[in-house]
Every structure is written in structure tokens, then in C-alpha cells.
Length: 91
Image: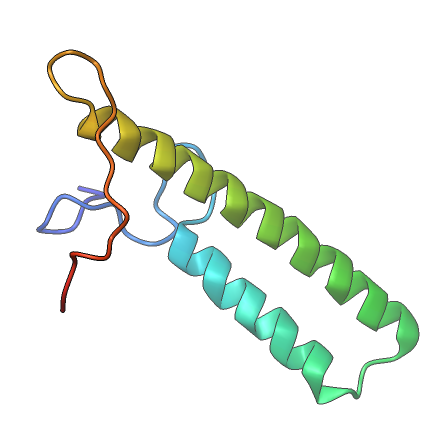
């Protein structure tokens, strides 16, 4: 019902009521664009900045959660975390 064909939840259709990471990024980009426009009065600029900081903190929290989940997936059978520096990854 609420999932796409690939099983991923649709943007904004989240059980926890939080926006998706992608929605948060779009929101942050819109806030930055408004601030960079330079046409906002001081109070509106401050409010937009505060909103941007709140969105940024939420995004950082989401990334931390994902990082913890990835670490769990990367643990070997002995529970040892195996990481790589990424230098052997190519595109």
C-alpha cells in the first residue's frame, strides 16, 4: 500500500512521521536558496537560518542511524567490524 514496487517507502509516507532524507535535503536546499537570494528581512533570515539548522541536525541524525545499521551489516561472524578505507572502490 504505502510502499513502492521496490519496497521502499514513498517520500513523506513514513510510519514515524519524519520526512525522508531526500525530503530533508530538498527542504535544506530551498532554505539555502532563500538565504542566498539576499532579499529576506533580517528576522525572516534568522528564522530561515534556524529552520535550516534544525533540518541539518535531523539529517545528521538520520545519517548516524544509517551508519550504525551499515556497521551492523558489516560485522563478520565473530562480531568484528570489518571496514575498508574506500580507496579500492571504483566507479
